[in-house]
Length: 273
Ligand code: X90
Image 1 (cartoon, rainbow, N blue to C red):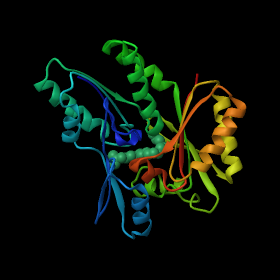
Image 2 (cartoon, rainbow, N blue to C red):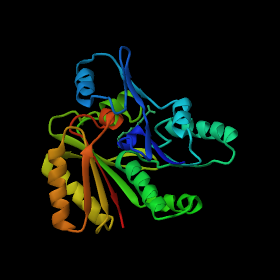
Image 3 (cartoon, protein in one colour):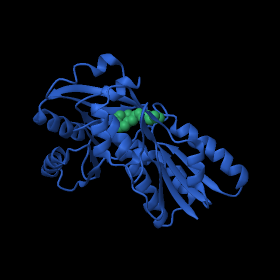
């Protein structure tokens, strides 16, 4: 059986060919599993009122192993190994699975990114497979495809990043101010803030400028948001005015990305050429 698998930061839902493997979001009192049953609004409300600390955890090797079940040709993509143990735990599962299934083929790919980029990588591998590409060809081509995707974000807060030691407190402060967004990208597998912007107009221009500077013309754009469809629709309109051939997809972030992007955050990934 051919399987496509990614951790839940891909924001992809379970389907016949695709299996998401959940991360978890926890406080000392509750754990939220980032699966189909998670009520994201309820989680965000709870965390907003919770006084103590919250944290996330990568999937266990056992949950990766469970997702591999019955697979003989398995394509796995993960979020960045620089910020999460997700890739390593999948690597361990891969080794264990191959011991008991020596004829299976497993491609395990570290996107050094997350969110829409991970989603686009999985969708591309599925598309290639449908077109009849072999395991070897897909394994060879996926890095170039991944390198051609750029991730951008605009967040109102970096509190959860800072509290989990994934960005310095210094970068995180000054963002909490009303109307200020932090605009940034993913670089070498890490979060890389680019600028602080005041007001929605500046945020929209920052996205458009970035697309222009990177030579965007007619690729796919994947936008995820945390309770902010409005900003995505505005950005979609602006992108289409400037690049009428862009193929734009807007959707709600699932649990893990919602936790880090926080309310009103958006993540935009695009194919540069
Ligand atoms: O292992 C764990 O507990 C998960 C840690 C995840 C930390 C990063 C989550 C990013 C979520 C933010 C996108 C912007 C930064 C991209 C950097 C690659 C969404």
